[in-house]
Image (cartoon, rainbow, N blue to C red; front, top):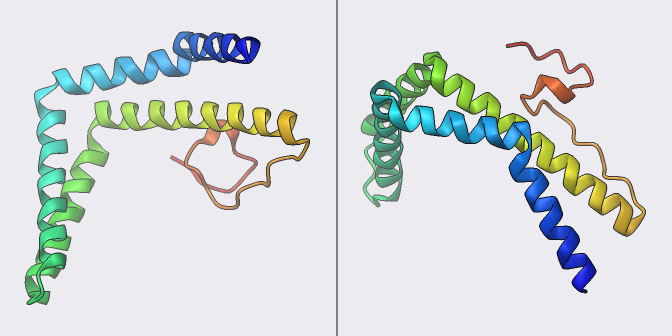
Amino acid sequence: MEKVLNQAELLAEAILESEEYITMRLCEQAVMKDEEATLLVSNYSEKRTHIENLLADSNMDHGALAAAGTELEQAEHMMDENKLLQKMRESNEAFTTMMKQVNKIIKMVVTGEPEEEESGCTGSCSTCGGCGHSH
């Protein structure tokens, strides 16, 4: 078991040293330091919480829910337009793709069974087989 744990530690260190992880962390730090980006995220979070509260209310006001949904969409659109948040989202997707590939390799080696290909677009064009998605 010690060999497995040592190899797991080496893998963890390699992940921490990967370009995908470093880029993701730098992007997250840049967003946290940027007032506009943090306000956009905070605004979106508040709108989402408001919708969750409306949905939890037994006397749900459908008009208020529709208005809150529109506000949430607008907040999401504003986040989508922010360059720092776009870069952070892309770096998170790249890291997630890398981790999925790592898990896929581990599963293949341990079980001998290939991972079933997921259908649909993951949003990451770096590993796309041609889904037609474009940024």
